[in-house]
Length: 137
Image (cartoon, rainbow, N blue to C red; front, side, top):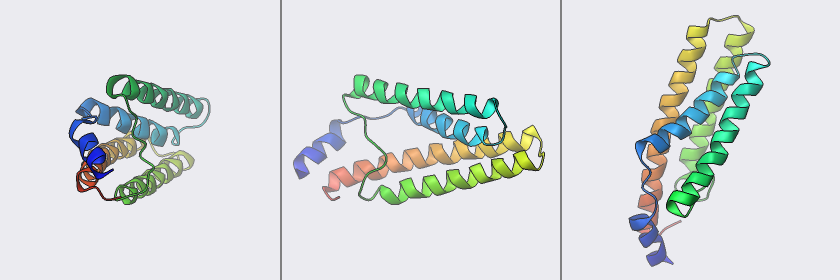
């Protein structure tokens, strides 16, 4: 099992930066959608859901596998931290919506969410590869 995990780490998907950015765009759009009422909020939910379906399909086609971020192991704290940070950003967007804060602030919150999600995606992948190479779960 340890050898199979090490082989997956060596030859498995090496996601390009655009793939991490696509994930970050999904997260940022989900966050930004909370800053608006309907129908914009619903539209900003449809895009990320379609993008997730496309990313899963593309990963399976391109790499033969889709690695789910919600898994046990050393990556779990990274995933939970990302969820907590995105929920906090959503809270900021909701506050901005109900307090008539301007569009620039809403875009800034979403921009920060994008940067955080991008960094967390890169970090998560690094930890995942190291975990596979170490053979521990």
